[in-house]
Amino acid sequence: MDLYLPIAEVAVNGLLLFSIGAVVGVLSGMFGVGGGFLITPMLFFVGIPPAVAVATSASQIVASSFSAILAHIRRKTVDFPMGTVLTLGGLVGSTMGVYVFDLLRRLGQVDLLVNLFYVVFLGLVGAMMLIESLNALRRKRKHGAKPRTKRERRDWVHAMPLRMRFRASGLYISVFPPLLVGVMTGVLSAIMGVGGGFIVLPAMIYILGMPTKVVVGTSLFQIIFVSAYTTMMHAYTSQSVDIVLAVLLLVGGVIGAQIGTKIGLKLKAEQLRILLSLLVLAVCLKLGIDLILKPSELYSITSA
Image (cartoon, rainbow, N blue to C red; front, side):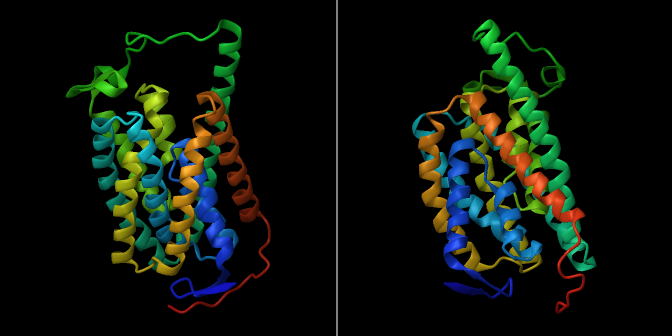
């Protein structure tokens, strides 16, 4: 059943779009990511213009993240103060990113920029996550599980001023590193149409030193607010949010997120990170190949 998308100005199978939302919802529940790093490229692949895909996917991220976070709140695995600091930084970064995105859209360079951002960031993050996760598995098999004490780390994160206690994470660190992580996530959310989970998750673990058990829920908390704000900003500045597309993705995402949360509970943290890194690298490879290969249509005409 083909549906016409008024803003995207294309006809796409409705069941296919629902399935894309459901798959991304499963990933959101499993990994604690909004799923934008996957849903936006998948929308590219089915013919949705990049500008519309980026702006509209943010709305699906909100729904799937909200659905997934409910289970984490029940298990008390959300660090709300840390999530609030990340969100404040994310709102600032998102505002900056939306205006950069709109400027590039008017200059006609947004398609290339979005694709390049995906290839570079997904490649770097996916490779680092895979290497670290494999090393963690090897260490665990060789030496067994080693509990980490609060005094293991004493680096620049702990040395900066204006420190705050984050009890759920067992941290007493400066608010500046979480704010900077939030700003970076917000910029990526606006330009790439992602929740930023594939960036913020490694940053929370390896930069801020948060325990894995609270990382997923806290990531989802900030993704909800930053993605909702990004969607509204895109709708206001560029009018590129397609409501029909958003509804199909939303329904699929909410259903999939509940399934993904149950699957995630059955997997170990290292296994989750390896699966996520492989998925990130696969999407990066596909986008990289598409940038190199000669397109089927060398020219296209669009209305200004």
